[in-house]
Length: 192
Image (cartoon, rainbow, N blue to C red; front, side, top):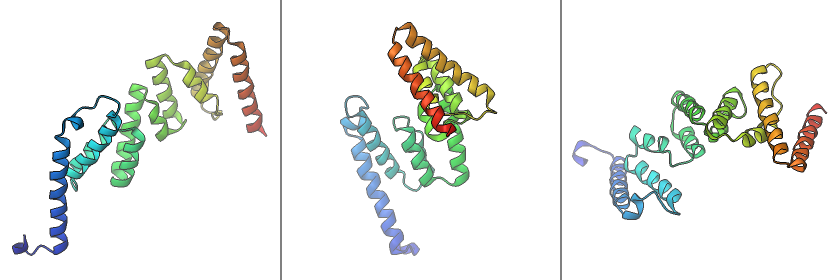
């Protein structure tokens, strides 16, 4: 490379990349790194992601290895995307993540959307997939949606009423009363 006039910094960078590839490849070849099962599966997934990122450093493949790794939390993948993607690519990535969360009812998507209209769609998909109206009711009971969101307000009210009915059916009247009192207290504080 010296013959082609490469700078010392360029030579160090290439040497660093080569060292990372060799180190990462040997680490990924270990038996304990190939298994994603067991108590250390999360640690293994993150260590694998670091190794794969280093192996392909400076390429789009390195970014994709991390961004499309479903063993990593969505919040971590989004943070990674915020750091390494250009604004347009980031917007596309976030929209795709929201669509996937809406499709599969993944509540991690609420970290991206908050309780906006797309966030309500994520919650609806969560209820449809897991029949867990309690989680949806507890989430929406802590917010006041804008009055112009008529459809979303109706859906959220249905979750809350279904949860209240469920608590009554289970004869958990004290829990239902505490739920009602907390919601009323929130409304009072918001109006004040």
